Length: 408
Image 1 (cartoon, rainbow, N blue to C red):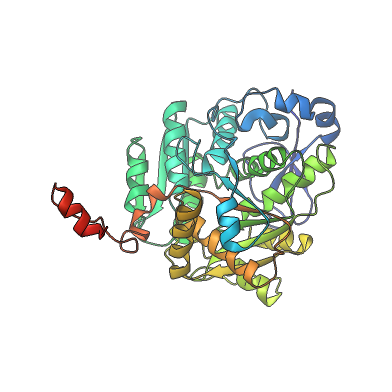
Image 2: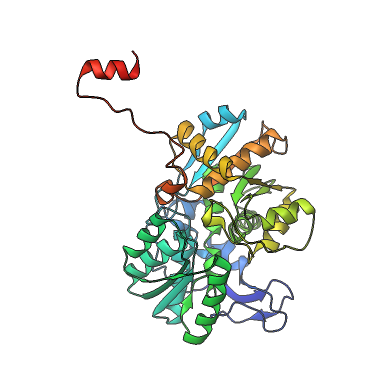
């Protein structure tokens, strides 16, 4: 039995049936899934969750599908690592890395949202899926649609990193490279979704798709021993991940699974594309779109769809936002690799660099629990660091050559 009640406008509160809808016809606000929490509370306990397979569907009552999950059965329950070496480097007491760069089929958190989106798209009867993507989502939609036997049309900016292009093409989708930035690609996809009636995961299926991000937060709370962290730093592109992590903590508390969360949410963006953080710092209710110019292409969304709601979560929790320069992004990638052996993509470099700044600024206390969100694997963005990490020491195949080279 489904726990979905329907859809509701996040602005005016008008209710809609649980169909492939994403925008309010009255005020043009975005729609969000609503649930029967009383019913869920009768089904979901800590014990029932812990007894299930370690994938994202262990929280299935809180995810927007009607029947059994059909996609993403190998996605989710990624490591939450106690990062003692990085904690020492940053001068803090209790630091964790939620590492979504591993244990997913395409090595990013996008496998969470796509698993939910495709499961729901199939319930609606779609046979073709699509997306607008800055890279990770392209990889994930291509892979999951291949397994699901669905046709796919994937749209990306033409200047995307080679690793992400190859990581999409290998699954043989219809990959369309658009001469424009992500916001232009997304507008085009909205038109195509309307004309061709395909299931675009981040357009007409977006209310269901976005709910998959909650599993990132559910896992953190469970892995911390059924409690929310005191501070969590989250990379922001469209702003949905930060918003849904906060929603996940509130839902768990509502169901009695964790104590009242005291978490402060922090938005991390690249300096070359920081519309959400700019608005936070200006204490403005208006997000001014920007033209992206940053090394962190996966965060290069100049007009974030959920930016307003991400700001709301930051304000509600007493958090803050900060940016990282391209140089700081690379240094963040290198620092995480050198201390914890984790190779993250540029979005992770942003998150590490921003966490470091917020700690130095005294905004994040040094003696409270901190989680840094790592959302993608560094093998996808090799170009970002290839000129910043030196080169191997070349020697002849002799012991003398070795000792001369390393000066033993």
